[in-house]
Image 1 (cartoon, rainbow, N blue to C red):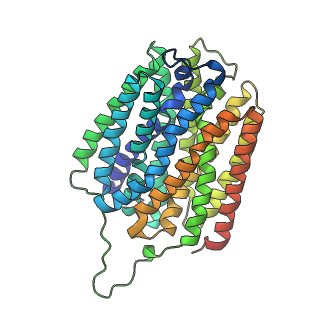
Image 2: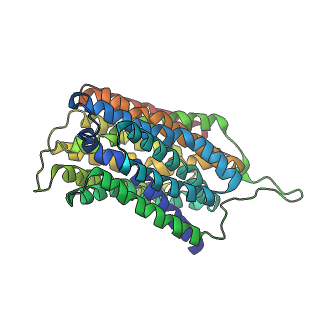
Amino acid sequence: MLNRSTFRLVLLVSLAHALVHVFEHSFASVEQLVEEDAAFGIATDVGKQVSGQLGSTLRLPFGLCALFAGWLADRYGSKRLLLIYLIGSSAAALLAFWSPTLAVMYAAMFVLGMFASIYHPAGVSLITHHTTPENRSLALGYHGILGSVGIAAGPFLAGAVLETGATWRQYYLVLTVPGILLALLLKWMLSHEDGRVQYREEGNAEPHPEDRAYWGAYAVLLVVTSLAGIVYAGILNFLPRYLGETGLDFDIPSESLRNYLTGAVLALGAVGQYTAGRIARPSTLEALMAASFYATAPFVFWMGFAEGPARLWAAAGFALLYFMHQPLFNSLIAKYAPRRRRSLCFGLSFSVGFGIGSIGPTVSGMAKTDLLNFTILGTLLTIAATLCLALWWRYGKE
C-alpha cells in the first residue's frame, strides 16, 4: 500500500501524465479538420498522407527528445523538468492556434512533441524513486489510470469544444489553460521537492539490491517498446477517423461523435491499467506483459476487417488489453535499470518507444486498406509478446 504523502505525490504527477496524453493526441482529435482547412490548401486526395506526416512530426520529437530529458532529470531534478514540460507544451499549443501556414503547423507539432517528451522520463522516474518494488506496480497502475483518463479525455474535450461551433484552432487555444494551471499547482505543491534522490552509501554499507543492472534484459525491452510504440501511434493517430465509420448516429455532428466514441473506447484503458497494477508482482511482470500483448493481437487483426458497429467492439478490446502493459513495462525498467541511472534509462526507453513508434502514423497513412494496416500492426504486437515471454523465461524470478 501507499502512504499518504506518497499517494499525494503519485496523484499530482499523474495529473501531469494525464495532460501529456491530451497534448500527445491533440492532433489525432482534429486531424480531419486540419486536413480540410482551406487556409492550408491541402488536396483531399493526399490529405490522409499529410495528416500522417503531421502526426509523425509531433511523435518523433516526443520520443527522441526523451533521452535528453532523462539525462537532464538525473542532473537537475524532475520538478524543474516537469515545469518546463507544462509551460513549453502550452506555448506550442498557442503556436498551433496561430499557425497561418502548413509549415508553421509542422513547427508547432514538432515543438509540442519536444516539450511533451520531457514528462515520461521525469515523471515516471520520480514515482519509482519514491516507491518500493512491492508497491511500485500499484503506484504505476494509478499513474497509468490517469494517463488513460488523459488519452480518453482528449477526444472528449475536442468533441465538446467542436460541438460548440469552435474551430480546431480554438481547441488548441483551450489546451493552453490546463497546462498553465497545472504548472502553478506543481510549483506550489512541490516547492520543497527537487525530484533528485541521492545514492551515496555510507561506510561499508551493503549495496542496495536496486543498484544492480540487467543490460541484456533492458535491451530486449527497448525492442519490445519500439514494436509496441509503432502499434500505439499507428492506431491512435487515426482512431477517430476509424470510429467515424461505425454507422452510428445520435444526432451529434460527425466531428464530435467520432471523438466521443474514441474517448469512450480509450477510457477502457484505465480499467486495464488498474487491473495490471493490482495483480502484478515482481516475479510475474514479464509473463503478464506477454499475456497482455498476446490477448490484444486478435483484436488488432479484427480491426482490419470489422465493419459498422463491430469497429467499436474491436477497438474497445484493443484499448482494454493493450494498456495493461504500461505499468508492467515501467516496473520492468525499474527492475532492470540501476537506481542512479533510472531517469536516463526511462528516457532512452521512451525515446525508442515513441521515437521509433512515431513512424506508426506514416505507415498507417500509407497503407492502402485497413486489412493491410492492422495485419502489419497485429504481427508486430505478436512479436513483442514473444520477446516478453523470453524475458520471463530468463529473468522472471530474479
